[in-house]
Amino acid sequence: MKPIKIGPYKLLSNIILAPMAGVTDLPFRLICRDHGAKFAFFEMIDCNSILYGKKKENDIIRTTSKDKPIAAQLVGPDPDLMLKAAKELVKRLAIKFLDINAACPVPKMVKKKAGAYFLKDPGNLYKIVRSLACELDLPITVKLRSGYHKADHDKIREIAENCEKNGASAIFIHGRTQDQGYSGEVDLEAIKIVKNAVNIPVFGSGNIFSADNARKMIDSTGCDGVMVARGAYGNPWIFKDIEKLLKNGTLPEPRTIDEKLKAAKKHIGYIEKHRNMRPQSMAGYMRKVAQWYMKDFPNACHLRRILNNVKTKGQLLAILDRTPEIIGTNGAFPGAV
Ligand SMILES: Cc1cc2nc3c(=O)[nH]c(=O)nc-3n(C[C@H](O)[C@H](O)[C@H](O)COP(=O)(O)O)c2cc1C
Image (cartoon, rainbow, N blue to C red; front, side, top):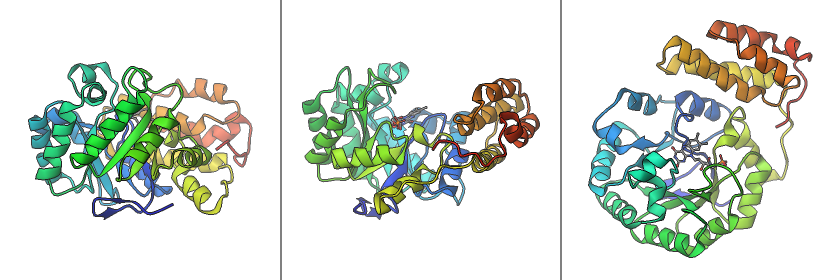
């Protein structure tokens, strides 16, 4: 694949970790980076939370020197507030570019006329892109979906073209509509249309759960790169796997249960170190994360039942140590990738 430049910044890989609210926190990004991700996003940041600081927002922008290079994404409806928030954000964070969210389908956000609302009525999106691109000394990008109620290829082409005209340096497009949320087919044609309409890099998003999914998206749309989202849950190797497939045409060996358990424990260690949560919430969160790594294990139902009773990190780690015994393997059994 051709190397991508977003403004003056040359990406180290065309495969990047997508923003996911409530998921791509610092522990998630670190585990992905440890296993091959070369670029990541903070989760989406609400412009009001930056300006009127809430505690939750501190967790969202927590980072370390290992958590680089990185981009941020702002969501909000109002061009003036977005500019103010963006200026504040770039003072606090060393980011390579700043993305504007025109994709979030959550009704609360759409009601505020932000996120995916811009797909219906893009006027303020263009104003935001223009003012941030003019006033800030870093590239501004936009994350779109294929449409609002239904895919509208003419409209999404027009929106992408106008984002570019107003100064956007790249487009990320999730090939689903607001109505679809996160399920249903991905409209590869919409991604292809956007790719052909603009001269800035275009990244496709949607159903990238394997290296093969990524190759198919790139082959059928011509997009410059892809964003990995839910495909990285319990599979932080996916970035390396995609790169390998694109480079050599080879698919990876399935990871063993031991490798998956080791990664799960490391992820849990990062949560303990970097998240600021009440002990019970933290144990619940760690259990959810551990289950991502175990979803393809034999006897998964039995294991899930045992995990459901976990109340502390200590209990969870003890179960992870006993997992090969619980599921009746010696740990070398390959899980599906
Ligand atoms: C839990 C969750 C949170 C998400 N949060 C964001 C977000 O903050 N900003 C954003 O642009 N997209 C967000 N997305 C969308 C993803 O970045 C991605 O475009 C989408 O999940 C499609 O990719 P996938 O089918 O491979 O998961 C989120 C998705 C999920 C599942």
